[in-house]
Image (cartoon, rainbow, N blue to C red; front, side, top):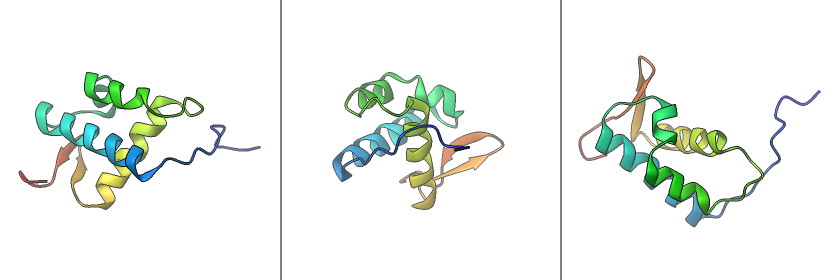
Length: 88
């Protein structure tokens, strides 16, 4: 049985960048926060409207968090996402 029941959705680089910028803006403005709070932010909800609806919203936010983490812009500390530097 498949673990990942969400269909594969290919996003353009522009869509990925828009989502990443929205998530990073929320973390910068609100400070360290949980993923659920980041997902409920108005700027992230607006970015989600432009994405395909085949995949659940939390998956898009999770993928953006992982891309930003791999880029070294954010880190997870005690369950809260925060920027790694003031200029990140």
